[in-house]
Amino acid sequence: MWKSAVVVLSGRDVLTDWMGLRAEDWTGVRCDQGPAPTGGLRFAFYGRTSTTEHQDPVTSRAWQLEVAQELIAGHGTITTTFFDAGRSRRDRWRDRPQAADLQAALRDPDRTFDAIVVGEYERGFAGDQLERLLALFRRHGVQVWLPEAGGPVDLATPEHRATPEHRALVRMLGAQSLREVVRDRHRAMAAMRALTEEGRYLGGRAPYGYRLVEAGPHPQPAGARRGRNVTRLEPDPQTTPTVRWLFTERLAGRSIGNMVEILNQRRTPCPTEHDPARNTHRAGRRWTAETVTTILRNPRYTGWQVWNRQSVDHDHTTPSDQRRHRMTKRKPAHQWVLSRQRAHTPLVGEHDFVAVQRIRAQRPNRRGEAREYLLAGLLRCGACGRRMESRWVHGRPGYRCRHLRGPRTEATPPTLYFREEQLITRIGHTLHLPAAASPRLAVDALR
Image (cartoon, rainbow, N blue to C red; front, side, top):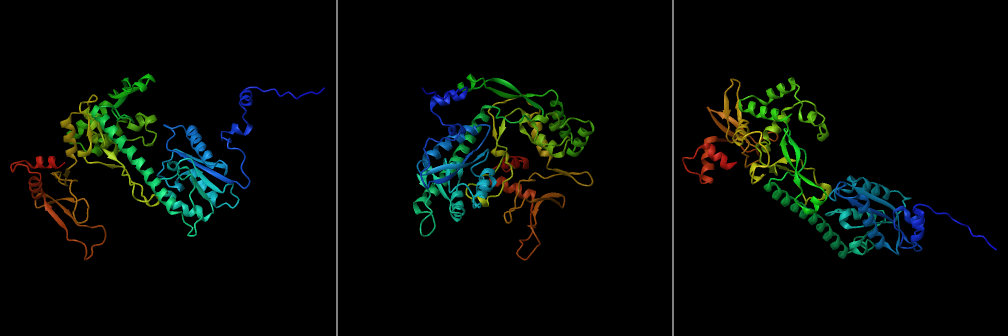
C-alpha cells in the first residue's frame, strides 16, 4: 500500500498545470525552443517601439521577442533583454537609454551574452547605423543576428569585414527603413492637408481665445462605433475679449511692449496661467512680447483653419551621428494650407488681421516719424545669403548688405545697396505686372 503526495492547486496554477506550462514560462519570455544545445550562444535581445501612446510596449516587445526566439532556435538562448519605448529609429544608439546600456555592457568582460539578436531590423537600426556599429560589435567579439539575414551578419571573413552579400543587405535594409519613415511622413502630411481643406480641427492645444467643444461623431465608422467624436474651436468667454483687445489696440498704433505692460498691470491671466493643464511645457505666469506677437500672427483668429505654418527640417541623408538638431522654423505664407470654408467663429476680420501684419514693417525714428519699408524681411543678399537690412537714405527707403559675418578682409564683397523704388520696378517686370500697378500690389504679389 503506498500513498501519493497530493498538490493542491489554485488560481492561475490550475490553468497553467492543465496547459502543461512550466514555471519558467510564466516570466513572459517564451522558452518553447527547448533546452540550449551544448556550447550554445548566449543572446542579448534588443527591441524598440516608437511611441507609448499609440503602441502598446508590452505587445510590441512580445512579438519582436517571438521573432528573435524563432531565429535563434537551436543555436542558443536569450539571457538578457534591452527594450527602448518611446524612441525613434533615427535616434543614435547612445541617445536611446536601453541601447546605450547594451553598448556599455559590451565592455564588461563578465557580460552575460555572446551575441545580439534583433526582432526586426527597423526596430534596431535606420540608415547606416548598423554598418557603423558593426565595428564596435566586432571589436568586442559579438555577433549580430537579424531575421532578414536568416542568422548572423558574417564578421568572420579574413578581412574582418562583413561579406559583400551581408553588406549589401544591411545597406538595403537601412535605406528601406528610412524610406518607410519618409513614406509615412508624406502620407501623414497629405492626410493633414486634406483634413485642413475640409476645415477639420487637427488636434493639439486650442489657441488662446478659443476652447474645444465636441462637433459630432467621428467620420470613420469604426471610430464612431467606439464613441469617438470630432472637435472644433469655439470662442472662450473668458479670453476672447483679450484677443480682440490686442488686435484693436495694435491697429490703433499701440506698441507690443506697451500692451504687455498693460496686461500685466491689469493682472490679466496669460495663456499659461489661464490653462496650466494644457501648458505644462511653460512655466511663465506673465505676459511677454513673444506671447502677444504669437497671438497677433496667428491667422486662425480669422475663423479659417490654417496648417503648415511651421515645420522641422528632416535630414535623411546626413549620417545619424553627424546630424544636427534642427529647430522649428516658420514657413512663408504661400506654403500654408487654408480651409475651403470658414471653420470656426472669427475673433478678428481678415482685413484687420492683414493690416496688423503690415504694422511690423513701420519703424518710428527718434522724432516719432513712421518709416515704412515695404520689402522688410523679404530680401536676401545673393552674395552671402544674409537678410538685407532696411536703411533710410536721402529721405527714401532702401536695403543694404555689408556681408559682415566676421572681420572685413580683402575678400569681403563691397557693401550692396538698393533703393526700394528700383526693386519694386524690377519685381513688377519679373512678375509681369502692369506698369501703372501700385508698389503695394507688387509687394503683395511677391509675398
